Image 1: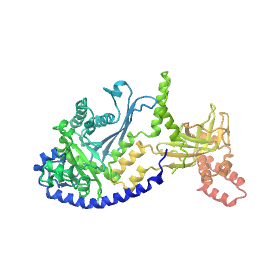
Image 2 (image 1 turned 135 degrees about the vertical axis):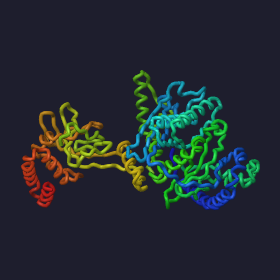
Image 3 (image 1 turned 60 degrees about the horizontal axis):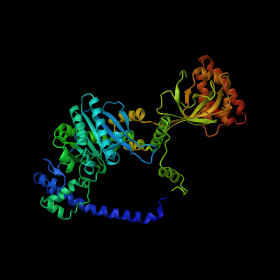
Image 4 (image 1 turned 90 degrees about the vertical axis):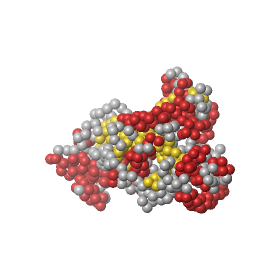
Amino acid sequence: MTLELSRVAAQVRAMGEEIATREREYADLVELAQHWLAQYADQGEQLRHPAYAARAAIPTAEPLDAAYPLPSLPERFTVITADGSQVQPDRHGVALYYLINIGSLVYRHGSGQAPQAYSQPTLGYTEADLYEGRLLVAGNLLDVRRDLAELTRLADLCSAEPPGPIVAIADGTLIMWVLEDLPAEGRHKKISDYLAQLDHIRRTGASVAAFVSRPRYGDVTRLLHLANVGGDPQRADREPNPLEYLPDRAVFETLAPGARSALFVSPSPINHDHYRPDHTIHFCYVNLAAEGRAPVIARLELPAWAVQDADRLALVHGAIVAQARITGDYPYALARADELAYISAQEREAFEAMITTALLRAGLRSALSPKAYYKTLTRQGRRKHRV
Amino acid sequence: MSNGNLRVGRVLRASTRGFAIGCAVMQPDIPAFGSFVRAEGQRPGSAIYGLIYDVSVEDDPFVRQLISAELREEDQEVVVRDHRQNRQVPVEVSVLAVGCGDGTGIRHSLPPQPPITLDWLYQCTGEEVQAFTVRLDYVRLVLEAREVPADELLAASLRAAAAARPEAERETFLVEAGRELARLLAGDPVRLEGLLRRLCS
């Protein structure tokens, strides 16, 4: 019925010690990874083909250990962000529906104007909304709809802006990796719709990037292991990788404040099977921290068309660092978009009350399922002291 | 004090002794400490009068983070505007109930019923303030109120009431208010002196 903290205390203590030990071991691994990064810096071209087979970061023309300082920015530029949240369909609820809420912010640097803030909810309730074939639109399927809604919002806001330097930023990744786990049926259509929105942004003249905070990807560390076994994907697969659990971001903690790493191409199969050629997703790491502060490494993902244009790439790089410097370590406009998208428990409760009223007006009596009803009884009236 | 039906905010919670109002953004002229305000009562034509005795701006963790990150000069204007115009900055205004009206007259006493959640609270017009302060019976209610800065509140409200009158009548009004204070605080000369000083400042 409740979490017995006393029963888990010993495990929590052991966890703390284990993490501390792992951190100490990581220090040696980071040193090794950085050594390999420098040692194999010029082998990008040889590694490009085997990297794909090994599902490792695919090098570009930039040396693996390249670092690019924070570029200068125009006096005025616009950052547009969008983020989404959703209420999953609940068969125990008063009605079967889903809700997607997209928050977005248009932040005009150097303008002195208040940013424009938006929240746009969309309710899915018809059978056509709720089902794809025999599958209920929930979990990953709903995530895909939310991702598309976020990108569509970014594209719409970009096209509404007057011409000028504009950066659209999405939260997370530009790769629809969740589709890897879904039936192939309909996958192509979903990706086409997504790429159409990337094209829409491109046509407006804006740049686009996705921002990953505290990334745990191991694409570059896998590449370094591959390089260390002579670029042989089979050997890389067979031989233990000492960097297996080391996230890429640890390798790039030596980046100067504001600097970015070399660009790589994402090894995701979705990227290679569906995104080619203009939209192939590239990524790099960037240190968002200000001078004298501990490094804060984030991952940026950009489509090929945005990295092939040096001005666009520099604008994205500089704009994201400028945004992060407002709060200290995270893009301000993304934090606001998340806030505008967030559906609180209170709001959800009020929304459910609206649905109940609408059903009553339509002559229907609705009720929670017995399971949901008893959960409301047992979870609200806990007969234990609060911790 | 010449704002017609200037809305201060909506009622968050209320009792017959007073109520709290929520408003999104602080306006330059409202809400101000010591201002006379009015909420509509439950019966048609009735009103509840009060004095604003506290205006508080709640913080939130995001604001704390921005302050600790030391906003850079170039970001300040946009970020501050975003917080003031777009984010719901929760300004909370506390009001002490000091009178009520039934459409025919005003009584300086606690209202029989409080306003209801989400009722609008208005700033009193100059005419309403003058009408309310024709008598000064509300002074005792303020002096006896607990958990409010009674003396500061009283002085601010009397100064506001004087300012609502034509210039030629202001001194007479303040002298009359001083006499009422002297009568009520005859046994507490130290408090009386402090209040009179505040009234004149």
